Structure formats: structure tokens, C-alpha cells
Amino acid sequence: MNKELKVRIFDMEHGLREYEDVEYIRIISDTYNLLIMKDYLPIIGEIDGKIDIKGKDVDINYEKVKAFYMNSDNEFNLLIKEG
Image 1: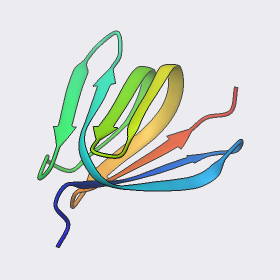
Image 2: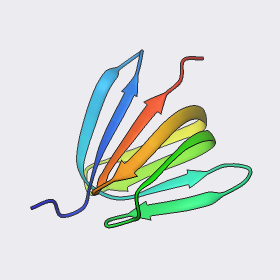
Image 3: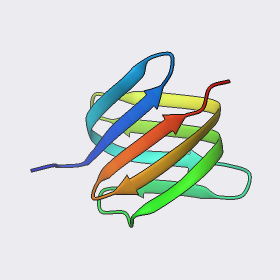
């Protein structure tokens, strides 16, 4: 049973990275601010801003990131653009 969120991050520098039991993902842009937690509604979008990913064993922060994201069934996918 999945306790929290599963996160997949893909970029050209590191390839695919996966993290389990993430508590929340905060997405901050000029036009909106999202806090994605377990059982959050399905969502897809593009970010040009800041992303924080926090969990028991993970603490990832991206400043000034351009990426696409999708959240569905407690799985969050982040595709970071080159640049």
C-alpha cells in the first residue's frame, strides 16, 4: 500500500529518478501556488517557477525551473526542460 506520493523526475542531466513516500509537492509560479498532497485531484500543467518536494527521506528544491508536471493516482511526474 502506498502511504504517500510517488514522484518521478526526468531531466537530461540525471535521467529518471524515483522517490517514494513523498509528503507533499509545492509548486509556485507567478500566477498560481499549488500544494499537492496524497489523494490530490488529477492535474497536468507547465511550471516556470519554483518546486519543493518534501518527504521523510527526500528534500528537493528547484529554483527557476521550467518543466511539465502531471499528478494522478498519487503519482507525480515532473519532466524538466533543458536550458
